[in-house]
Image (cartoon, rainbow, N blue to C red; front, side, top):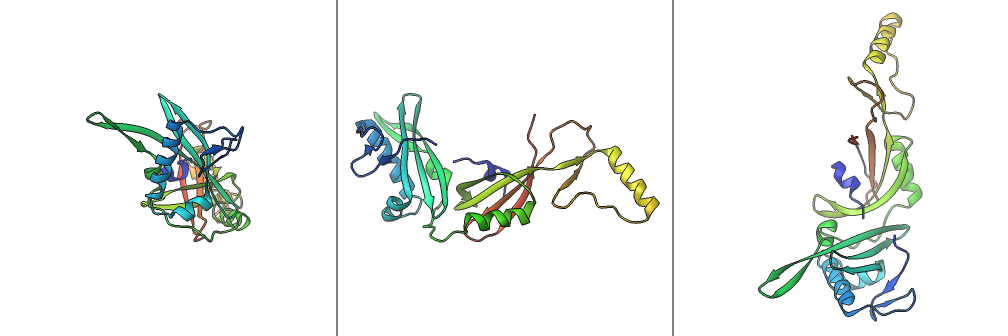
Length: 224
């Protein structure tokens, strides 16, 4: 799995309801143009593969923005214990005098299936712990892997960077003691570096598929 998949981020406090297209906060109706954005976004999501019934059960409208330079619809996808925020940025192209909206959500999700069973949060956290050790900031994401929408829990930790001088000292101890010293403490990944100390260490990333339980591990370097 590419690091970009880990970092693809899908809240806002007000909740809106389909059907009558009313905002639950303040009970204000959407404008006609806002309703059009919402319905277009819903259609774009349905086109990825899920049914109307599944959509109504698992998707909730959070916010719609209808500004000339900022048109977007924000949804919450909920399944069992897991909640994901999905943003649909809306652009357009023209055919003659007709303006046709485009929706980023179709590409952001990929081909969807109607997820029913998932790992519990507790089980997913245990798998992540086994996969990468202690970690920070576990979050749930819903997006495409090889074109297919998957629900994954992602977390990261900083890798300890061993400098060149540290490696030389370690190898000297190995020669003296005639036994290999462990490079890291339990649960800590070690990455050797020829660079000077003080630079940001890379991130060790883990992603657990919340349907299959498979954990994918990778590394990413954040540019300064």
